[in-house]
Length: 148
Image 1 (cartoon, rainbow, N blue to C red):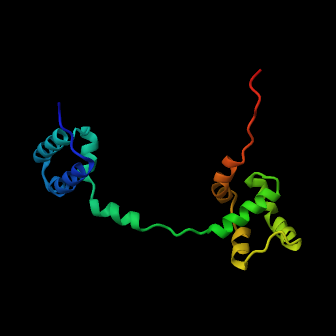
Image 2: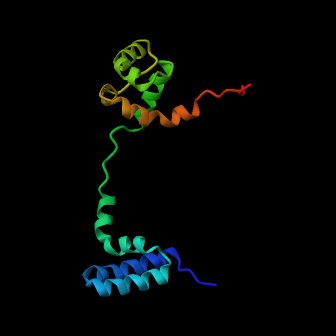
Image 3: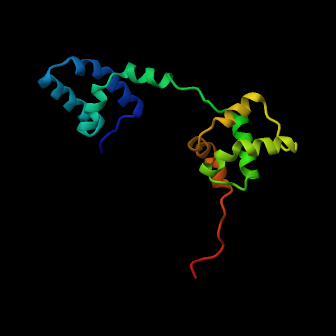
């Protein structure tokens, strides 16, 4: 029975071998790759990718993440207006959103901050779909009938 390495051990081995692999010439690269695949039981092509990439380069890209544009207040207001519109699809919902907002605010069903209101007025149909995806799955209609 063969012993397998833990994931952390395989990652450490890849990190320790990758600088040497990237600087080596072709025949030495083959030997390093053979040793690495024998130790980790990775497929040769996947091992080549692991050893070729720069570890520090990947960590930097994870740290640079775009901040969220629409916060929880915007999402809650959007869900409330969407429910009041009888769950219109986003392409039909967005053009009428300014009218829905003014009517709901006029009748006292909704009170929004200026920033939330301006974000709702500039939202796109694709973003509405992304923000409403959990609500749609929770409130979707279920049929009790079968195919008969």
